[in-house]
Image 1 (cartoon, helix red, strand yellow):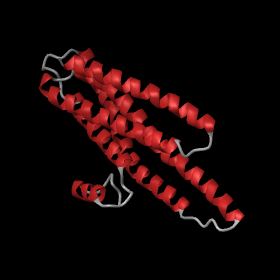
Image 2 (image 1 turned 60 degrees about the vertical axis):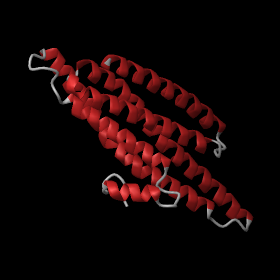
Image 3 (image 1 turned 135 degrees about the vertical axis):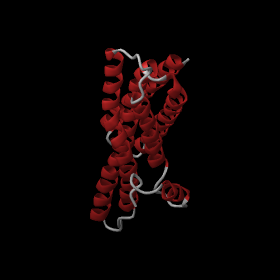
Image 4 (image 1 turned 45 degrees about the vertical axis):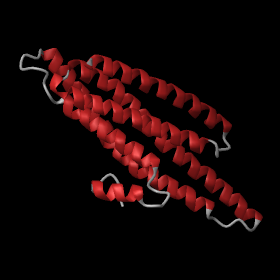
Length: 205
């Protein structure tokens, strides 16, 4: 099933099902999608009827920047489940003969790389959304403060969950250059997400 287009009940049942997919990576992307959607909503609310042109323009720009993220994160939810399915399929490949072992090893590495790239993209999107959310918090309608606060919590959960999935998959990858560069990027993105969330919440205070 598509977790980006199915019902909430179907998603929750799938997550509760004792099968490997969908798992934490899908849940992280869905949390991020909900967080961004709340920010899109908040960016569409004028602060007051007396908003200046600059304020209205700023909120409109934030909405326009957030909407593609709101579309991309549900896709990450589906891709994450698909990627882990590919990992499991690769591990099930035959390994009796030497040539089978070699093909299996290549397949596993390729599948793990994809399964790492997807949550990494979720993390990038969540960090970017939190940074944009600070501006929404500063210029948005005070009546939406709780919605923006919930968005910040959901996006932080998405970032944490995505980072955990990336780190879990990196351990199985043989490409040390890739592992090193992704480790650095994950650390930087988590720091960005932390700092952006703090600024966003401070703007709401």
